[in-house]
Amino acid sequence: MRVSVVGGGISGLGAAWELMRRGHEVTLFEQGSRLGGKLQTATIDSIRVELGPDSYLRRNSSANELIESLDLSEISPAAGKALLYTRSGTQPIPAGLNLGTPLRAQQAITNHLVPPSARLRAAIGTLFPSLLPGGLSDDLGTIVTNRYGRRWADANVEPLVGGINANTIYGLSAQTSAPTIVNGPPPAPPTGGPTRPTFGTPSGGLSTLINRLEEALVAGGCRMLTSSPVLSIERRGPSEVLITTPTSVHSSQRLLLALPAYQSASLLGPLFGEGLDLLRTIHYSSVSMLIGYSKEVLPRHLLDVSGILVERDLGLLTTAISIASNKWPDWTGQTGTLLRISTGSLYDRRHLRTKDSELQETLTLEATQILDHKLPMSWERIVRWDRSFPHFQPYHSQLIAKLDTDLFDRFHGDIGVTGAYINGSGIPTCIATARLRAQQLVSV
Ligand SMILES: Cc1cc2nc3c(=O)[nH]c(=O)nc-3n(C[C@H](O)[C@H](O)[C@H](O)COP(=O)(O)OP(=O)(O)OC[C@H]3O[C@@H](n4cnc5c(N)ncnc54)[C@H](O)[C@@H]3O)c2cc1C
Image (cartoon, rainbow, N blue to C red; front, side):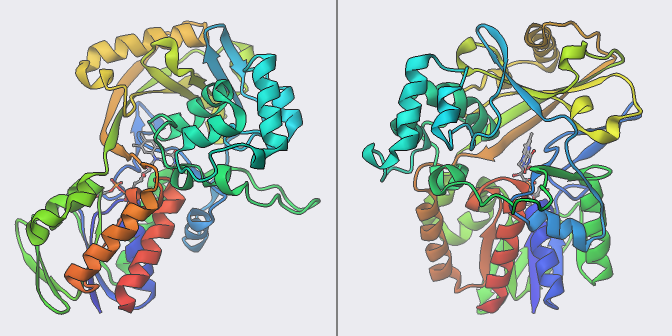
């Protein structure tokens, strides 16, 4: 079957990979001059840096499988200690919690981020979850507050899960954003067996994965059209979709849009008329990052710290500092410190109104305050990711089910959608979702 994929991020590439392996004739359209979308490894002043994501969760095996099929090697973070910056300085984030929630009453009782009364409240919630209300909600903030108390939710869950989603946990779908809190963590590996690290990344950076994937797709006969923005699509009749770029019109039997929701909405809008409101209701957060390199090393007590999360109500722009030079074992041998300082969320848009030079200055000052140490920077770079994190509202999966039904009613299975807004924005989820949706598209 002739299948077109629009979007050359990890979702589009994952879909193309699945279709190629099933023997379909694939053409992929990417508007930019390079593939990878948000996955982008750069070299600045001989230092390798990730400008977007820096790793993926290994628990969902989709990324690992892809890495293995492409014969790439993988590395895991070297330093695992994470800190939380609060009003009273930095404190270690307790280990062993399930996305900030306790699995055992003992973890609640010994938690130093909340006062004793809040620990007791969380311990009761851990021991007797069924006695507490809130079971029917899909609002993560409500669920966590009902189970463990508001103090616990704000101190332990908000900085982590809110931070990962560039959002707040209040008004966030629990099933989509934190399924392990609702369903429980995955089973522990058998005792005595090898313990698998939680995070991984390809040796050489995430662009290594993209480059190798591109090579494999081209070798498998896929047409990879970069610098080819799709301007419009048209369904001519059963199994005939026309895809228009500035230089060509391409005919295909099936089409998969692997784009952010708002970009899919723009392409589908003219075909749907007024009926495409669902895609437009998915809002996005914008984030920015200051990436900075210093020739100096951090003080000894910070050398085993991979990152620092920042409590929300301190008024700072910074949401997290990742110490890339501590985190990655392949940094060994290089000197100095590489920081990635993040800012922005759905409700904090101050960075969008701030010029690069001003943002750089503020984030550098805040890093000095948070690290309690001044690092003279050799270079700094602001990277902006506008409208990059989808907001998963409570009952998001029902919205997606309705969207799929609407698309099917209109296009009878010839046009499908995938992307980070469907099931979750982590790289492995994007790959798994794209592969599944590619399979479904050609099975109709
Ligand atoms: C700063 C940041 C940090 C992150 N950190 C992590 C992390 O550590 N771990 C993790 O698992 N996830 C992380 N994520 C999330 C993850 O990177 C994304 O969810 C994922 O990469 C999205 O991939 P995608 O292919 O769905 O979308 P994109 O990467 O956005 O790809 C869409 C592609 O479509 C192209 N396109 C758009 N319109 C058109 C058109 N009309 N015609 C042709 N092409 C078009 C775009 O140019 C782009 O290449 C992070 C995201 C950001 C922004």
